[in-house]
Amino acid sequence: MYTPNMGTTYASFIKTLRTKRGVSQFEIAKKLGISRSSYIAVEQGTRELSLGEFEKLSEILGISLEDLERGELPNYEKYKQMILAFLRLNKDLTKTKLAKLLYLADFSWYYSHLESMSGMQYRKIQYGPVADTYFRLIDEQTENGAMRITETRGGAKIPLSEISADEMQLMQKIDHKWKGKKTAEIVKFSHQQMPFMFAEQNDIVSYDVFTQENPDEIY
Image 1 (tube, helix red, strand yellow):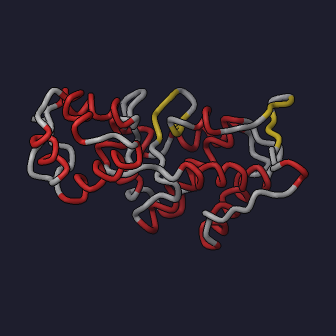
Image 2 (cartoon, rainbow, N blue to C red; image 1 turned 45 degrees about the vertical axis):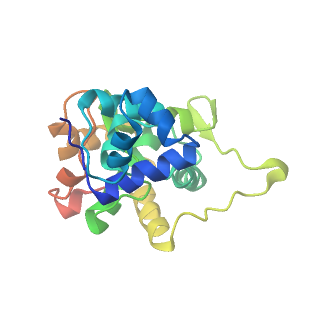
């Protein structure tokens, strides 16, 4: 049996997500190839999922295996606002440098609070840790390799309502440190941190490992 994080919290997450998706217990049970009563037991936290059932459930609910295993969805709206916040602080950002700033913000916040700002998971790729949905969520235009801010119609600014004052202060500190630095410098920095070094290529990098970093080198 595959046992991710079975229990009332995890089971509640599955039930909440199923309800949001508008899928009935019967429909999911049928797609999983189990009885409705067996699926109800999953949502009650009294039945474990096999690996095959777990993978099928992630497809049915439209969620990554990693997020389903964590029992938590990232705050995509907040992540988009974080992107916009960094672009407002520095209009001359490449996609790669922006990705690294977001990584440092999420992981630095986790270092002090044991939770990331956005809840996004980051994967080890060639240019450093990058959130899986980064390139899909970053609604932008490129011009000579730099980013441009896209605001609402009529020029009205999008409110950064999801970001707290303390979170914004941390993002400003991160931006201040790396403003004017080359993309290659921040890429090298992220490669030398434990989450990147300890992960296999294309694997999710660990927030928990990051807590072992030198406090003077978290960003």
